[in-house]
Amino acid sequence: QVQLVESGGGLVETGGSLRLSCAASGRTFSGYRMGWFRQAPGKEREFVSAINWSDGATNYADSVKGRFTISRAYSKNTVFLQMNNLKSEDTALYYCAADRWPSSNWHIPSGYDYWGQGTQVTVSS
Image 1 (cartoon, rainbow, N blue to C red):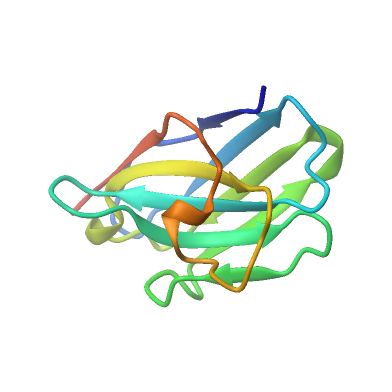
Image 2 (cartoon, rainbow, N blue to C red):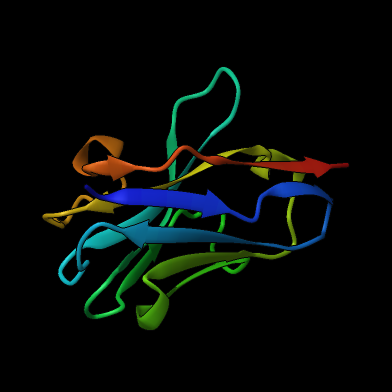
């Protein structure tokens, strides 16, 4: 049973930083793609970033390029999202997701097979 547990969310002022963590368990994740999505109230879930577990290739939404960095730690089975220069529009519930069969469609939520419960990020202006 795959489990994804997010942590690291919180309240931060505009321009501040947070680091989200996603602890993955239940199997080895070689060959998987691990992603971060977010959903603000009244909006659809949107892609933030993703990383291929095996080769480390990454992808970012245009809105976070240059501010967010995704990484993974093999030994801890954990994926991180370092978020810098946070803006009020980054306020959302952030979800970790895992895709068993990565394709060229990095951005589509339905392509991911497992999801965490989410961690709230609130950026105050």
